Structure formats: structure tokens, C-alpha cells
Length: 440
Image (cartoon, rainbow, N blue to C red):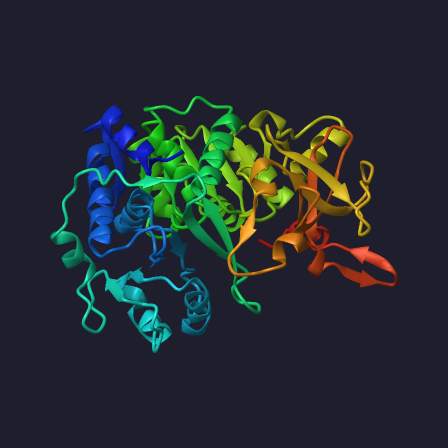
């Protein structure tokens, strides 16, 4: 069974047309414009001869071109390899050697890093810099200038790759997780199923995390539903507050360090932030003391999302009504949890010998779902068998569940400290530190 790659973007463009879809600095694009930009890049890649057997690597900070690459690669049926903006040239090269992309698209701030990383790599047929050229290759604007913006209508199979996502690239050989179109759409369905709020055309979300990574989990659902996506090039608390007031923003996605800084620099005398209806958070454990302070300042708007690259998003959700500050101890302590499994996801806590542990006991978090059972790794024979056993993905995260199924993560198995025969978990140490008034 084949289907048209990126059909959801074209559908959203037809549904919402010239309504405002994306804001970046002083630039405002409609749904139709965003779709046409994606089409132009998709057609340019097709003109270069790229298809499902090639890959495009992308190294960009948040910008409009970030959206072009996400939409364009999907529509062209060319697997997308996201490079980490924090990696130096040596680490970028490890991923490039493993992924073997045919072309690279990179921002102006990465000219030196990419130029060094691609030295002598025969697989790279072109580096398209935004505002710069590499060797004999034209720059990104020139590449797009000769391409049309009509719908590419590339047909793909459910098992064709849409993305090759790398994790743990700084330790040993990079680990590439393959994401086919079917798993990508399963993830989208899981995301929408887990939404408890009425996401619609009146909503808007600020994206300050990388659109090429975790923030992209929200970009596409908001685009499909006709909500606005407001993209910030980097996190700046004062500017974020100004945007919230000016654009009447309803949603944020913040990692814990961002929430800490936002709380520290909150200025309610200058900025009206009353439009905020949801603050989504995740990617790292949220300190309970920070979360309590956030609820006191913003109200019951917090929503936690826990997931892994190998599994559907979200694996668990802690909904706003479950963020309880006062009550029975077993209820209040759930602020330290990441919620309960979402629909279509099963979670068990298992011992080292794979026995299922009872509530309250710490063990490895193991996940069963369509996405987890079907996870595969790029050019890493044996890694699937190491991580997936009898259909259950073994995450390497340590945690425990209470009697009601709330999941508490205590750290990674590799980070556990053993002192005097007792296990000490990193999450416990960090929570204790955050209780000290002089530690931010």
C-alpha cells in the first residue's frame, strides 16, 4: 500500500489557507506559504535525484528553514537526519560517516563545523549553506530558486524511512534509530489521543527548543489543527514574556532549565501572561520544588510528557488536574512522577532477571507498544535483540510505579551510585539539592 508523502501538510494548507500559521521574528507566514516552501525544497531534492535510498542531514538552529527541511524532506520521501547543534566537528563526522547522507543543509553559524566534518567524505554530494557556499556547491537559496512550489506527490510505502534519529552520539559509535512513515503516523495518532485539551485554530505555541528535535513533536500537531506556531531562535525569558502578551499565546513547551529561568525572571508587572492555558514540559526530570513554584505562579496549567526516541510519544502523561499541591501524601508526591501510560502503551518495572516487580520497587522501565516493538536501529546488528525482548523495549531508565500506575523515574541505570551497599539514584540527590534555598 502506497500513499502520498507529507499529505497531512497539504491537507492543512487547504483547510487553513491564508490564515497565519508561523511567526519567526518579524516574519509571518500563512499555512499555504509554509506548505509551498516545503514543496519548493522537496522539488529541489527530487531534481537532485534524491529519493528513499538517499538521506539529507540538517544542522540548523530554529529558523524558517527549519520548517522547510522538516516539511520538504517528508514530502520528497527522503529520510531526514537531524544533526545536533551542540556537537563539534569530530562528533558530527561520526554521525555523517554512519548515516552517509547525500546532501547537507546547514545554517551560517555552522560553516566551519560542517566544512571540517565533511573533509574527505565521498558520500556527501553537496553542502547547501544558508548564506554560504561550500566548494562548488551553490548555496541554499540558489538551490530553491530554480524549483517550483507545486505538490511533489511522491508515493511512499509504510516501511519507507522518514527519519533517522541519532542518540548518544558523544559516547562511542552513534546510535541511529530508524523511523518509517507508518511509525511516524502512529506517533501522531498517539499524540492526538493523549491530548486532553481542545487544540484548535485559536491556539498558539511558542517553540524555543530545536524544531529538528523534541519541539517538533508539537510543531506538526499544531500545524495540522490550524493553530499558530511561534518560533524563537533561542530562549530569552524577557522576550518570551513579551511574545506571550503580544500574541496571546496559549501554550509553551519548556525543559526544566527553561522553566527555572522563566520563573526567576518573571515580570507580571510588565507582561500579561494570562493567556497561557498549557505549559508542557519534559525531556528531563522536573524538580518538584520548581514545579510547585510554577503552579503557584501560573496556576493548574502544567502537563508532563515522557517519551523516548524508540517509543511512541507520549509514553506517559501527567495531566494538569493531576498536579496536586495539597492533599494526601500519596497524591501530592505524584508531582515527582511523569504520570500514567497513555492509550496503546503498557509499562512494567522489571528486575535484572526480567521479573515484573510489584508497586514501590525500583527496576528498569520496560515499554510495550506498536512503536516500541517495531523499533529498529541503523546498521547496528544485535542492538534490537539487546533492547527488545518478547516485544518489550528495555529503556535503561530506572523507576517505580505506585498502586495507581503512576510512573516515577529515578535515573539511568548507568548513573546509579552504590554506597555502603545501598543504591543512590541521581533524581533523589537532585531533588534534595533543589530544596536548598540558595540553589536555583
